[in-house]
Length: 606
Image: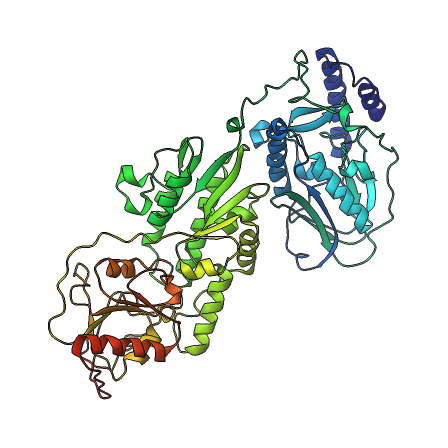
């Protein structure tokens, strides 16, 4: 009965739709919805199944991939963007769902009813021969993909309804479509084996895959109802059809600037990225920041806010993070786990601010894996502001350093979960650009990296060393990843005094046997420095090295510090003690006129 009603309406698709027809359609739809709700209330086989990870590592049984964008008319991108936004919301309720053997999967039991209150917007819906704006419109692409994958996997099709008209190039063109309309036009299928649903949006595709144990899923039965073909000219679009007296007519955009914005999602302040954003922003763009640091005199959030169309802050989150950070140790696994939880919460705060008309994002890398997993990046182009090495690379370097120094107390104290590393790697592959001032990070992405300049701080005068004994400053906590072991080995036997900043976290006696002094907070730590040395395996923010450069102090740094394009910096490879020692000997020669080694040098203590 339902299909005959829809067919009769579609046979009149050449006529201009009227309000009376719409009222009749809506009245009949309400009757069908009430009937289906009553039937499902008494049907114990139809229910929602939970997200789980039992089958996450099983074999892929089937996969369906379909393009997100098919329109050629620039005016139609509004409804297309609405469709993509609706797909983002819907797949969150499907991704990771695991359906038991012989259980019936129902599209609407999982996706639920679409509404503005749930964040759905106007997307494309095929009705009466027209692509009309409809809240939640576009979800048929998801039901099509599920049906297509179910056919490929050999699942039993319990309920399926074909479209009465075809959009050329869609799955309906291949008779692999399944239209849905809340709640009585549903897609339902089942398998003799448990299976897992995974759904995601890439930059330009919707991907649906099923995972499970190999084997035939069930007896394939496709409901009858062959779609009738339609030419592209028969299907009108409410934005581009030009029929102004239709009650569904939608106001057309007047220019390209009326649609499509960029959102910048940032966390702690980097002057390099602030300068980059200031050069790229437009007056319609959105800036999401933890706090307006310039107004509140918080230099760690001092982003430039002028010139943006809107500014969104996450004040409550920032207060919570500030409170939590006071209770954390300066180092260790607990601190790293807490930081990751904070990044996840901030990514969620920002994700709730993204409207469907935002088509491009620029995000800091600490938020990237969480935005990717939540689906906020799907269907959008995005650039990444790299605030550190990718997690996969970072952990490889820590593992390599630990092989050199298995006695270290810190090199193995934390590793990220596999899902987090995988999510970040996937997102980085999809990113359009990788923006960084760090030369070694830029080398990891040679095909799409954008290397920007480090910001050198303002210089001021310093007092040069006068006692003839070169002082080498190590401007970091004593950690294995900061090259502390390499520096200790390289200094052994050299007539050099070492000045350190930061706590000693590799053991109180770590520097035993060397002439060492600790610099107090507030001291002019560069006043008597002959050189600043940081042979780190990993250094994301070499701010103290840049300060030394600004004041004319020679810097010896590993490639992991990312300063190979900065004048005044001598670069060595991390882990190479001989190279480091050779550079330290040059400091002695330049300062004292000759290389003086003292194999029996005695430590002064603390």
